[in-house]
Length: 425
Image 1 (tube, rainbow, N blue to C red):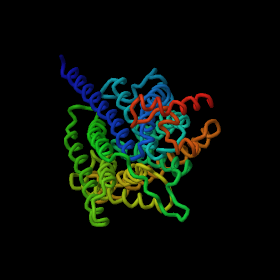
Image 2 (cartoon, helix red, strand yellow; image 1 turned 120 degrees about the horizontal axis):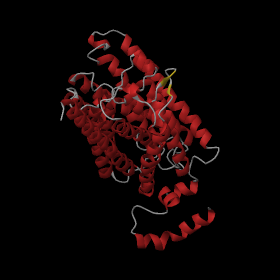
Image 3 (cartoon, rainbow, N blue to C red; image 1 turned 60 degrees about the vertical axis):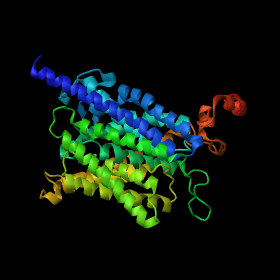
Image 4 (cartoon, rainbow, N blue to C red; image 1 turned 45 degrees about the vertical axis):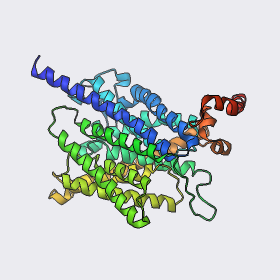
């Protein structure tokens, strides 16, 4: 066996393994969101994750990957490679095309899962399936082409190693548009403008979900090297760990002093915010910079949560504060702290300016196209559950089952509801 063949084999194993780690993050999303929402909607959370994985994967295979990584057309969009057919030699990959596609497919599933949490407990399941197709086939792939597929932002020098902007900020602002358009959950905000607290159904479950996401993030960030022998892997892993720890630590301490107790949902989301914040710059910033990035990510997440509440925007799992705000900060942080060309490391203003431009464009793209996309979907399918469906719970309304009942008890109590739904259809 030649050295080249050995290198190729190691790269393939590395990328497939990290792709599997990223896919396991869907289990993290499922547990995190199911633990944060009320138990009557937990099965619906799981089914939306399965829609992400199944419908999203197929949509990306048929159309999305070609738009993202096909040969560049006008620096805006890929123009070939639908169904993975055609010439992709322009990519100059260290692994096979199939291996690279698998890794990218895991990424696209993560994007749509961000939106899922923001519209939890009230989105119409059929409308959500249509939106999955829109996000994974068009919205995310076109934006991804600008940065990773040879498009105009990459030519300007925009840096986003693993997706603080392309995945998290874009997904988070898409989630904001969806949450605003669909509206808050029934009873979330009182007539006097105050907010009602919807207690999480299972915080230990949510914490396990966060730990799975944390684990998968090492695949997310370090796997983006696409090479098993890349000397940056160890550094990427340590700054990922430090930023997540800093985000969790600052929210733990902040809530301890602000409320007199450490708030579990805040600490969970603070750690995730630290992970999101370091995703753009993990290959470009120092250890100490990663801690600063994590601390700021955690505090911005807390501030954004208050901002949403003040504007009566309902985001049950904190998708916008965690992903959009922390992702935006992480993108800007590259322009500040990058060891090469960062403003605070002697590199001047150019990189920071490019980062700001790219960030604004990507966030606007996600928000605007999600808004109009859901408006279009609304012409065929209601995008929101009815009051009756929301009151009963989306588990029974859309899936005919409850997460917390044994099957014999369910059949005895809930079968008339299932028959009623079938008759109405």
